[in-house]
Image 1 (cartoon, rainbow, N blue to C red):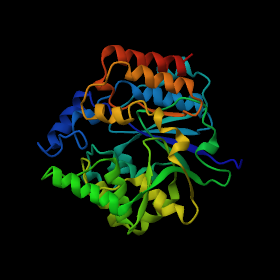
Image 2: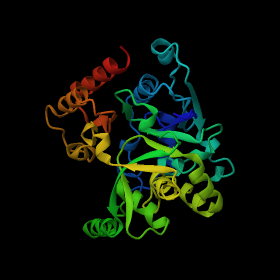
Image 3: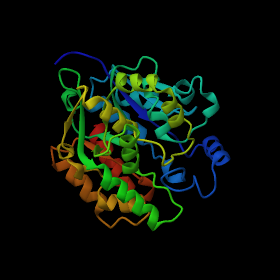
Length: 336
């Protein structure tokens, strides 16, 4: 394999921090930014997932050169944890403040919206051309060789199925009809917006909630040529339906020139998403998880070698017993 550096970027926030909560409350608009998909507390709750995310990268993707943690004046305080469990690590961990990404656009700060940040990752100082984007609730649960993310020629691997633009638009229209006054801003809606932003009429890559292999230059070139698009995307403090998914925009821009290859979403074994199966989506919306659900998911991920990624979404919905199960499983997987 051709040797080229690969970095990781993680978006993280400690929503329990009183200063962050006060800042968020100051800018929130009641009834607009307090829903779960935009600015509600659910989007900012954390249970130390960042430790497991970083530990999984060090354990199962040791070729990563640097891990950049993008945050808002906060510190995940990982030094003691890493010194204890990964004393011989060679991967550097760096904190990148929002102000670095918004240099020259300070009037747009603060932001509480990953979509406003994702489009600006290419401006992280010293970020390599090839990088993998993680949410802080992503975990690698098996060795993940480079070729799972980039081939020998440096082309990123886009795990996706193709979804119809007309069908996605019809679904969004139906959602708005079903709930008058609401504006859809979910995961699929952001992908649809990416397609519409680029004038795609028929289909877009429907990605999973997994780590994304990206090429920095693809979006850097696009936003340099279209600064007004970047300004508009970064201007939203909270998630908005008019924003697009930057990963899908990146893939749509790069697939035709050959910066990316597509593989089926099935190659990632989507059943492994610990909190992202059908029941997981129910739990994400606040419904109760049935007894035994978490244990079954963890057992599946343990038994099946095809499972390489897990997403631990909405841990705040778990009972103390189920939360302990998750933590014990991660500790055994990553620290022993």
